[in-house]
Image (cartoon, rainbow, N blue to C red; front, side, top):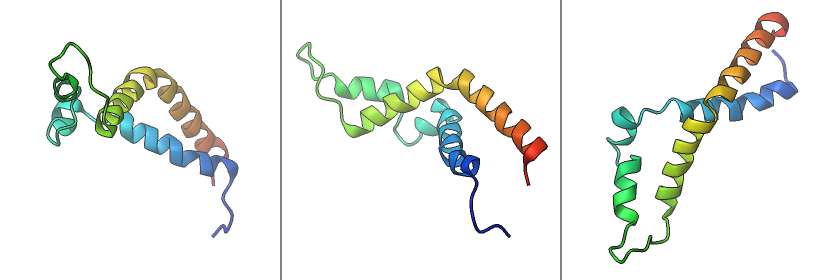
Length: 91
C-alpha cells in the first residue's frame, strides 16, 4: 500500500472530471434536469433585442458544450496515453 501519490496520479483527477463532462448526453441527461443549451438560449433573451447577463447556470451549460466540442480529440489522445502508461509502467 503506497502512502504517496505519483505525479501522474494527481493529474488523473482533472482528466477524469473532464471525461465525465465530455460524456454527458444533452438529450438523455442534461435536458431532463433542465440544463440543455436550447432551454438556456430561450431564457437569456429578454425581449428587447438584447441578451441579458448570463447566469451561472448558463455559463456552466456553455462550458459543458465547449468541453464536449473542443476537447473531444485531445481527450482521446490523453486517454490513450494514460492507458498505455498504466499498461507499461503502472503498478
